[in-house]
Length: 114
Length: 115
Image (cartoon, rainbow over all chains, first blue to last red; front, top):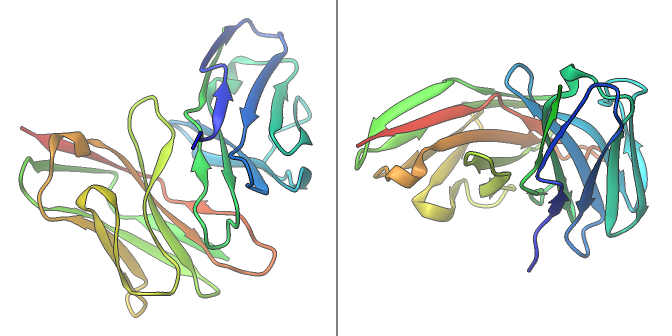
């Protein structure tokens, strides 16, 4: 079975540019999560969706960040405009029933903002 | 509310010796607990999970963990370390509260294997 697929794996861009990260969850999983991992703050939940609807976006740092899930097989996380402090590894994860079933993680997107 | 504390940020063991990674949790409900492993430049991979069945949980690659409610602990062990076990390990809790699908992650323990 294909796992969670994220693209791109690496992104280097200049400050002020728009960045779009993409995620394809595992087929049949109703929940999709976006995380950010940094050395300073560890793993942080940014937002999660259930059946394509955003449920909790309290972890989204500020208005520069937005996430969408137009259908059950695709989600995007967008940063506009990007800033150097956004540099991190961004993970997408999906799950069938996250209260007692594991989340399955993609390999992440390593984002560097110059 | 739920929280998890990984007691060691870094553990070093010699190859072939036992591994112990410690985790304590706090949960208002009957929790689900997980251990994930992260190898460099990779996502998190599930090692094992506890969801109110047997208290001793066996996972992949020879790892196991024991749920001890009285001690609020869920320590990860392996009898004999292998070089490929070098990675970051995360203890994770979900308190199974209705409507709470969020996981709480520990800060991670970096495991180094000495040849």
